[in-house]
Image (cartoon, rainbow, N blue to C red; front, side):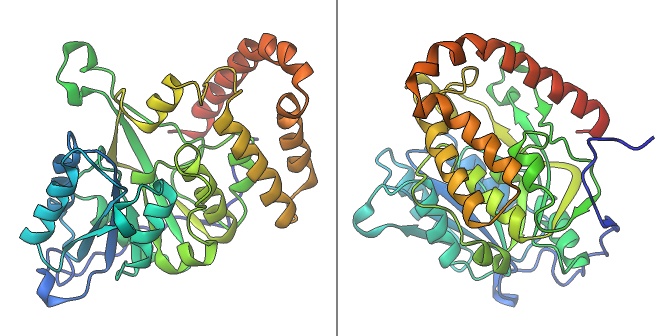
Length: 342
């Protein structure tokens, strides 16, 4: 029986071709990088070295690492410069003029502008790659030259603490999309907006630089929260997307992450859905859907979600119904997880 939640796909994922030995493990002086890993950081000294070492441990050798400093003050600048000095030609240090703090989107764009590779990978300074990450996902892009982005399963990583209570908490992030799907441009847009599918984690993707450029890069008005969702919506509109079934990266869960600090500061609320950050995102999404002449039913949905922001008299009723909306969303995600896999 057909799955009513399955996404359209015009072709199943083919097995990637074997990666040439000359490209795996090549020393930097032998060839230009194929992959540019962009790692942005702001006061990330606690975890940064582990993240960098996970790139150095890759089985795929033709990479460069761009360490983009967003105005750090905690010693992570010195860590980044030290790695760049140890690995000239492979690791480069970048910063904004005057060591400014310009936000996550502007920092990612800076790294992308300086990237020499055909492919772009993203890695935040508190997350890690597993050793076969780049080799596997570059192999998929090599096997599918018409695909702009591949993303896989990312692990929510709790056990890094070593605490007994965290040992069994690691879990894959549900995506709501079957592994192996190869989706044409625009096919993911509606499922992502309706929360039928989840946007990838930044550490979960490898993309063609040409596709990133065609999508316009990151939106600099988003300095923190929702900057990744905005970018991935643009990518999914403009590019063919391949869904990978392997879990090759870890998204570290800790109280100093962007999501946790924004929630603690009251700028983002998971359950009520009423927050300054979400308001900005919905305003952008309305503008984006209008400019791209997308399905008017999606535009009406976004405008409904904007009602409590634009008409404060509706706030009490909206907040009263928030637990029911959250329960419905969790139930729908559980159903989609069963039907669509991880």
